[in-house]
Length: 215
Image 1 (cartoon, rainbow, N blue to C red):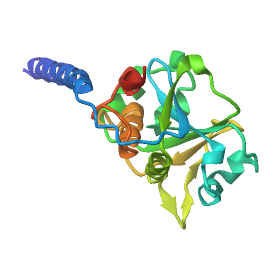
Image 2 (spheres, helix red, strand yellow):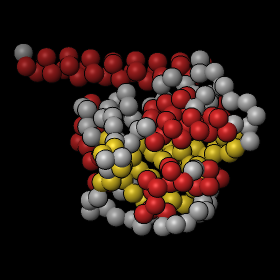
Image 3 (cartoon, rainbow, N blue to C red):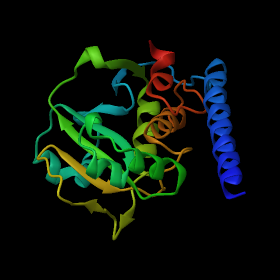
């Protein structure tokens, strides 16, 4: 009896995942409307097989916003700030895709786990792994506001997370929302693009779904 119920639960879970994935691809046919005009600014979306990052030139930010990343930038006003979202445990314990562990992956997807925002400072763009997006100044401001609103704040400061993983050009900050199947690194990116008035699908669990409108 226990085995039968377990098999039924596994089957139900599998069917739910299939429906979720199929639905996400159907939604690609009905993206949000692009509201940007007078496209004078340029950003990039970095992507690999499973992850996306929003890359914005440092000089696009005003001094008020840059203060949150002053330690990371070290008074440098060049290059790009790259923003992405992820599960806290996954980001800390899986430095490369070859280190992926099934248990951590399942836990991050099917439970509400703490989320982190990863912010990197890079000197340039690898255009082979990035797509270019042109947008207006107003849409850029909306995008920046949406990104910054994702951070958890205390005493008007972003809460930086420091653990065993340290990199001089990459910082981790606590996010407002928990990570789960419906709020992943790629759905976070898609949500931010949509908030800015850029074309994006309403559900983007996969990196290719994020960049699909721009390829």
